[in-house]
Image (tube, rainbow, N blue to C red; front, side, top):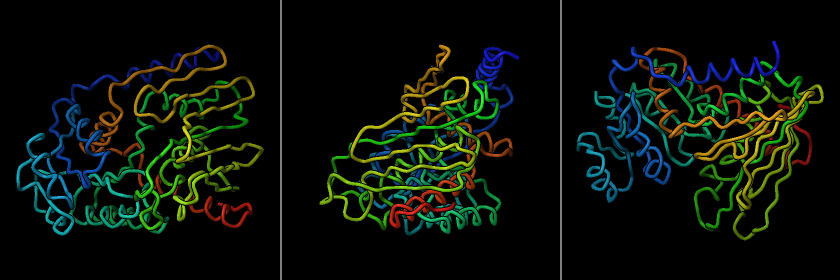
Length: 355
């Protein structure tokens, strides 16, 4: 088939998967409890849950009692569905809650994801999955032991333009992939935030670098074999414990490399794939909206969905309701953290590190 015919069929498939199923519409909504009521829960997940078809905000877990009345008034959350970090395990006895969504600093993900799994609830965990491969594996093991599903919050893998890039990696409509460029970052003006503390899982590579790592993997449908890396900062008085900026190169073997950059000191938001017979890119590729791109032969990658987080949570809810595999399982999050660990080792040693 010609390249455009392949692309056309793929786009038709993407449109088809966006259409609701009449079977799905008859299923009940899953109750979701958000653990951690910071910015991402407050400004993005809670509003998105008002747009979902297959799940609903039913509970909260917070260490800030002053936030509770405001959340209860806004979202109609009953007293029995409000928990703190000390009594979170009692969710096990609450039939209103089906899913516990971990939206805490990275350094706390493993502890509370394991608690959620041990309560018998399905677990959604924000990215990055955890600080170490060992912590990631602990989450996976707890979910397996308790027979609950685990999904990692890589919203981009639920986004249609990104899914086109993922399909290109398998169909190779522009020939063999020769190189990848992935950059993600923003300027963070804060000077005393948990993202600047090592024990909490701070650092640009954890927070933004995983976008580059995950994109390099899904854009090639391959796993890197080694990495080189260099950390830098323009604000050493602030970034005393973690990286402000990290440049790293992922080697996939056979001459295929991904040049990556992540930072808390500059705006970066681009994914480009160069192939033997052309190229394609998304720019921006990891924003909360407006993902768009183009190809070397004039194709526009501009499929639209109204809310990425709602799409992600609905997809994950349907996997539970239909007892199907989730789109982004725990093993996907673990694979990225294995690479993160190698990046830090390479940056600290100045040597190439095998993954």
